[in-house]
Length: 401
Image 1 (cartoon, rainbow, N blue to C red):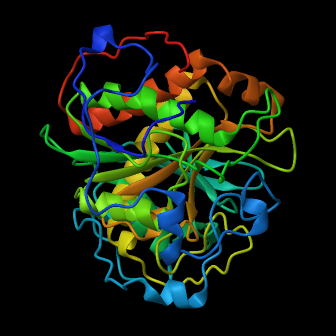
Image 2 (cartoon, rainbow, N blue to C red):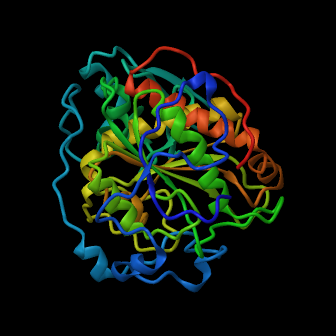
């Protein structure tokens, strides 16, 4: 960990990729962003107090503070546009439509039916990739990457029926080939989770805290992104507790195009393992994860305006993390209680790079080479998203700060 540094925001540092090494010290060109508070003392005024168990790790409220109904209603409501009208969603008499009929209407041709003894699956071949959904299962697949539907499809009259909202918010954005940024002037905010007294999870391998690993991950990632065309801003560059509201405010202040929050997971069972990626739950859809918070399906948050892009970025990063690390696929999931996501006025995702409560994964996370793989995975996904270079990221091995 890095100590003794003022809380600052790291602006882009363009480095030659072949010469990149571990961020053993903070970049020399650092600028405080005016008007953005980043200390624990100044940050707590506008945010509800964290529950007592949020420091190390409790059964619930792991790293997001509870938010009162008043705070929820203080967030502005926005209308949610349809992500794309490239593909039509046929009108139906109820909230369920035939996926095979939808495929034919949108000129994908017949969906491939995969019948098992107990379930019916349909495989759609779309411009974006191959989408597979299965009756009775919330888990669908996009080019073999898992993502969670809001509602489990079911079979009626021999047809696989999918909730219309799932088609609009999950199938449609993936079927539509993403149109990511095509210039080099885009801003990404990288958010190393936790900091200061908000330690996050404790590793069962070496007793280090999540806040240390997320910061190291972010500091490794920053030069990789900067050298490939992104203007990179970090929500923290040392061990400070930056409030959730100030992390969102920083992204607004720098007019960010994308927000990525970095975390590691923890669970009650030590056999839980794998990588998860989260984005905000669309309005009207139940969340994959609630952590005992109220999951009001009627709420509309600013970030819901980016439902489709959220999913596209989440799938892209999730795939890269799995490919680079060989981790287990726990899927792209949805959550509504994550304050750091729902107030964002841009695409925003949160990634969980493995379980600190699982001995094998905790040992991997403690290894600097593994954290370098995590950084290179995110950089690879976002470099291709930004379409600023075609050269391949080098697999440099760096040492921990």
